[in-house]
Length: 265
Image 1 (tube, rainbow, N blue to C red):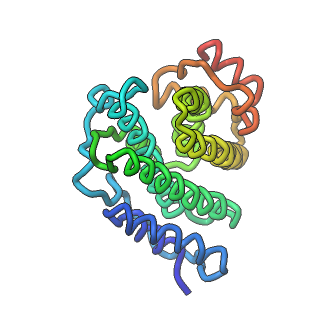
Image 2 (cartoon, rainbow, N blue to C red):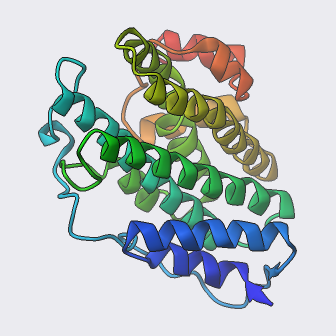
Image 3 (cartoon, one colour):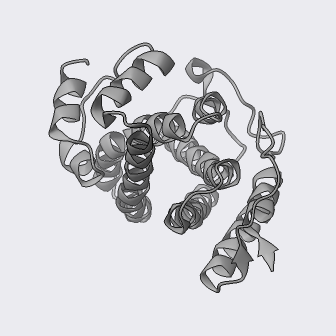
């Protein structure tokens, strides 16, 4: 029987996106078929980077290809940026499974589902890029999201709080507006893809909240106060709005957290 942690590491280290996603979706199917065990007798390795090809070229966030809605190229650059986030999220899901051991079965189920859905998101966005005459790797990208995973690799609570309740939760605020812009342009295919992503992200951020609070409870910590302490420790500030209150409430953000976010801490 295949070991979940070894298989997650394998998916994470594959460089070619097609191979990574084929392996990822196959691994999710194996889990659902009951073909995996999650015995753990090894120490997780620390990875500074997932497996990746030379393209896209990684640059600082302020130097990424210009994105927008005014031209085909800028719209493609925007879709490329979203595709890069989704592929990074696939790698994050596998690292989150591989790195943190001894957790309830439901934890691994949550992140396997996330890996499968993020894989589907990337495939859909890449298909749209190709339909527009471009492909993944044609534009530059940044690695801020993965950098947050490296910084939080030592502690599950920090990983859940920062990666999923800050960076991934940002999609809850941003995607609805982006979706409406594409709707105004009559791009029904991109609207459909982004609608699916927006709906699935509710589940992913909810999982982040669930396991963040699980770890806070284990350590006897107040989750609201701990979240804002993590914001100061890792970001040095509270993220700026606007915040999608309805979506964030669905993901388990408390009224107190939302009020403090709006107030800047």
